[in-house]
Length: 142
Image (tube, rainbow, N blue to C red; front, top):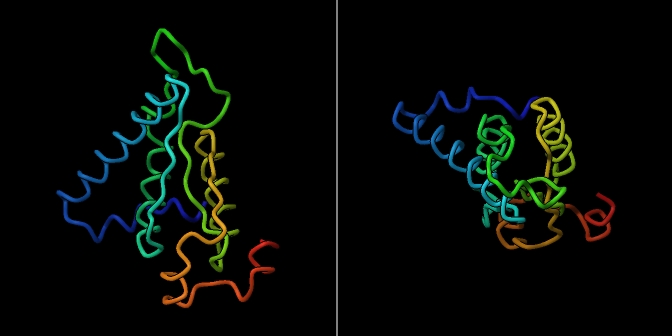
């Protein structure tokens, strides 16, 4: 899937690439720990401008062995649901494409895909960036 493009990491320093890899590994392990205790991790950038970085980290974590490995705890997963969710702001133009590409990337990785859909949490930031859908009806239809 197109959104799993690690070329964006090329702009980072070697130390920042290592930090990104560590963050993805830790996020994957955190999701597995949450799953073992009947919970999940829900990611949200809180600011639309940061969402692309959170998206990349989410997709990187889904491909990590720590995320894909079976739960090693005595108490196996108690939920039949994904351990890691990403947020999709449905009021933003292009959100349905982002959601579809991420679902495809998760399927390609053989990972469970979790999505948290938001209809209007950060409207002020999105309005300033000119990224809002034209109406509430258009958001509802998406």
